[in-house]
Structure formats: structure tokens, C-alpha cells
Image 1 (cartoon, rainbow, N blue to C red):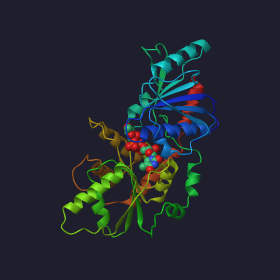
Image 2: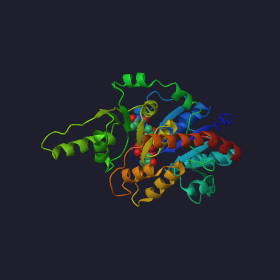
Image 3: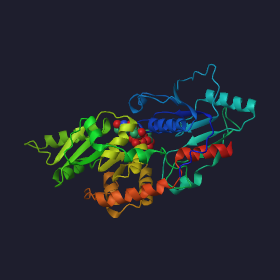
Image 4: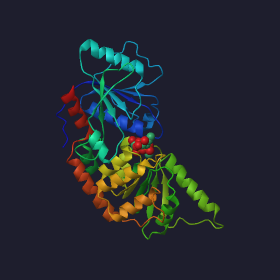
Length: 369
Ligand code: TRH
């Protein structure tokens, strides 16, 4: 249920630090522009805004990008009504001091949201919406609230534009491929956005050996480097150059977020990674395989299993993920796109019956503040 009716018309300050990869900036940009689309005003503070130059080159009139310098330049600045601390980024203390004194002067309660990482684990439901008193520093005495994105109605939901499925229904796959310079001749199209999965060589071998021709659309950056590394390694082990069989490979430039969606809509199977691209692949409703962001203590294993359980993944989809994410030894199982596609479309239906993240965030703010 989308609920564009809940409007607060407030000024939001969203703070984000780019740790690595594109997800932090990607999620915060999506949040900022979706808030702006519902009539909110947003300042997005980023320590490194450079990924936005290719993700969102046209910007958004409702979103002001500010560089998070140390110290922050706060001259003449009035803090906004809502403060969003994305992914535990520790908002600059000088900004918190300004916000706290603004609240005291206006006798308003704090509207300070701790936006957390996405997880399908049960604790996300338990912790969603909980208050957390600030015990020290310039915000001492204020209260933050945990906001957990998630896959069930007891969480904050997932970022989803109200018109997304209509846009997808009107999408012209052939025209888009042509515009990208991709001359597809009826092959199966597979997108690849990944880190360096050890099973990548196996995937390439599987696609080469398949009776059905495949075109692999490889995203720029780490995925491209990983594929090229695999191919070079393979070549160095062979005296004769190997043929790619029925596999052809296209390397893509960095796409805008909008064209990244188009890529997911155009393909018959999407390999995605991290957080934001997983959500977009779910919303695309096509068969997907997720490479989860790896954590040192293997905490991502439980997170992956929780997601697959929520998804209702079949044994074959479970097994493919276990292998792709190096959780189980053994070869990659065969692709089963019919089965995987059905699973994803059913999961998407469940998501469409729930509020999206911006609707639940707006409701949370108007109820609590
Ligand atoms: O880049 P990621 O691996 O980001 C990760 C995750 O967010 C992870 O949870 C976090 O802990 C870690 O960073 C630090 O994957 P993700 O989350 O899918 O983000 C990719 C973003 O990049 C997404 O918004 C889509 C966008 N994108 C484009 O806009 N164009 C492109 O060409 C590509 C490849 C991605």
C-alpha cells in the first residue's frame, strides 16, 4: 500500500558517509529524491558526493547536496526538522549541537532517525522504531529512533517509487538495448553486478557450455575487473585460446540509477550485490542471484539465509546462493530460471501489499513528532 497522502512538508538533513562501494550513497540518494518527490525538502550531506555524478547526473530540484567537510561549514545555517543518520555514520557533533539548541529554542522534540542497514533477520522487526536516548555529547538528553528497512510490515519497508511498476510496464527493452549499443539477437540476457565471487569462473564455464546462447552484461568497476581477471587466468592456463562458446560479453559503462533499473528490467537473470541493487532486482520481478556484502565474522551467512527464507527460495535457488556466496563447497548448480522467476514475482507481490519505506517514514515522523 503506497501512502502518498501522509505529507509532512518538512526540511530533512540526511547524513551519509561513503564507506566503500556505491550502496551508502545510492540508498541515501534514493531516499532523498523519493522524499523530495512527496513534497519534502532535503539536504543530503555526503563526505564523498562523487558517485552521484554518474548515478544521478541531473540531480533533483528538491534535493540540495552538501559536502560533509570536517569541520562542517554551518555559517548562517538553520538545522532542518528531521535528522537522518544513515548507517551509523556519527553525525558531526557541531551539527548536533546546532540541532539541539534549535530544539530547545523552539521547544520541539527531536526527530532524529537512525537509518539502519537492510536485513531480513527477525531482530530488524523487534528493533524497528525503538527509541535510543543519547547519553553523551552535544545531543545528550535527546532521543533517536531506530528505523530498520525490511521485507515485512513490522519493519520500515523498502524504498519503492509509487509509479515504478507502471514505468516498467511501459519499458521498451529493444529500444533501450539499442540505445546502449547492445546488439542482442535473441540471446538470454544476464546482468552481472558483483564483488569477486570465487565461483565466477564456474559461472562463465556454465554459460559457455549451455545450449542456449547468453549475453552477459557486465557492470563497470569490480564486476568488470573480476570477469577480465577470470578470463585472463583461464587463457594463461591454456595453450590454445579457448572459445567462449555461446557466451558473449558486453562491458557496460557506469549507468545512472535509472538506467541501472532499465538493465535489470531488460535481463532474464540479474546478478546483484550489496543492498540497493538487491531491492531493485526484487522490484524488477526477474530471476535474481544475490551476492551479499561479506562481513569478517561471517555474520552475512545468517543474513543471507534469512533473506532466502523470506523469499521462499526453492532448494535450487538456495543451493545456487550458497555456492555463489562461498557458503557451501561444490560446483554451481544448474540455472532454473522458470522456478526462480516465479519465486521473485511472488515475493514482489507481497512487497507491493506493504508500505514502502518513505511512506512508513513519513507516517512515523508525523505520528511521533
Ligand atoms: O555497491 P554496493 O556493493 O554497496 C554496498 C552495500 O550497500 C552494502 O550493504 C554496504 O554495506 C556496502 O556497500 C558498504 O551495492 P548496492 O547496495 O547494490 O549499491 C549499488 C548502487 O549503485 C545502487 O544504488 C545502484 C547503483 N548503480 C548505478 O546507479 N549504476 C551502475 O552502473 C551500477 C553498477 C550501480
